[in-house]
Image (tube, rainbow, N blue to C red; front, side):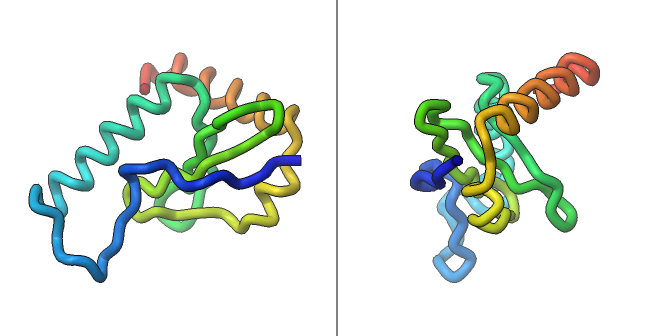
Length: 107
């Protein structure tokens, strides 16, 4: 069973706060670039949510700990889904992500 760790730093969006000094567009682009860099580790899993993805970083396998990546719109899945994940589920998701990345040449 998985646990939900602290969210990944640098990906938090607070739309009630003043705009970032770099501007929202640059902030969003930087977050997507940072997410692409994280995906190269092979430790990012995602679920389709609305018009985007809920992304999570696999911090550790034993114990299984996932950290929310609030890039873009910051979509998340229900914490109950995270708690119900097994290591075999996460490994299968990481393998699918790696296969899709290899097939489509995405990072």
